[in-house]
Length: 200
Image (cartoon, rainbow, N blue to C red; front, side):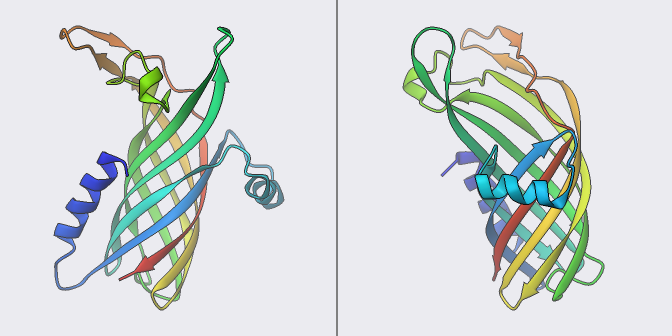
């Protein structure tokens, strides 16, 4: 499991030891586009598995607020024109805060969301990566949106939609201390997610 996700899990679990906190762990799938034509087109993409980023998330529900961290990944192969296929991986790491006006565990759970993170592309196989400490491309972003969840006891499902606001290009640092600007990750403007969680 990814080190960043483990670190976030430990942090949220420590904070979540408070009396009124609800810890939730789940999995989600995300798709990205500059526009979504219809609910049918979204459903078709999920059915085909086209361009979906899959991954785990963890949330800490505090009555009408929640803090969360998600890590979603898409793996594929790419030929850079050298006659060899390389295993590649795109990543989306996001920290977010949500407002739940009816309560985090209410059966019908509309919510609003704001957060930030980054998307990146790198080699999936570290043995093939000439620079394992830095990704090939990386772009930070801010997101704003909302969604709707349904909670049936300890089981919750949800759909959410976010607008993405990309930041500036990121900087990579080499072992000798020198640095250079990474290429920007080619981000879309919108993200749609479907997910399920277990609330402890």
